[in-house]
Image 1 (tube, one colour):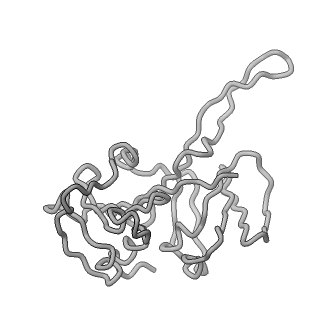
Image 2 (cartoon, one colour; image 1 turned 135 degrees about the vertical axis):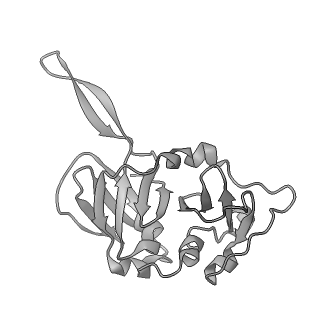
Image 3 (cartoon, one colour; image 1 turned 90 degrees about the vertical axis):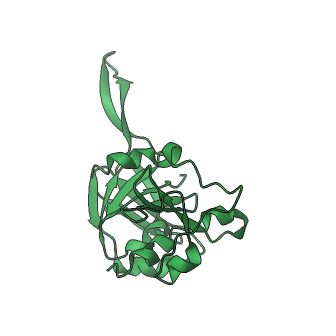
Length: 203
């Protein structure tokens, strides 16, 4: 259960002190809300930041459940959100819907990735530190690190996975159109009034 939006946003800020511009959340007029990203995941909290566009909230303050907007330091720029997250303006078209397990909140700081293999038919294959549970075999899937979604443990989540129509040659010489997953494209998600992007795992 999400009890404080600011603390949720804080979990998407970077902890890397060599990338201090990502240790804050940015009020984006383009996206219409407060945005946090660490380069692997991005979260948009719609509606937060109106009247403070172009300013930031320090991640340390967000972790405390508070928000005070301040100006960016001279020469510091936040990533180009039109380029990396412009598609979020269109919202999320749910392709897969499921409830994230409550134990997910305990793996946010896990040293090793916790991979989920997500299929177009909604089946999830979990792999934790070499152990895996397979519920169905399917050739069309994407993989992502569940640590990126730990802020939403126990919540219902919608995923939108990018697909494309590809022409495949048949043994008869004919061609057929097949829907394929763009495996390295960002995965869009929606949870409560948050929108976001997750970069998939490399297989």
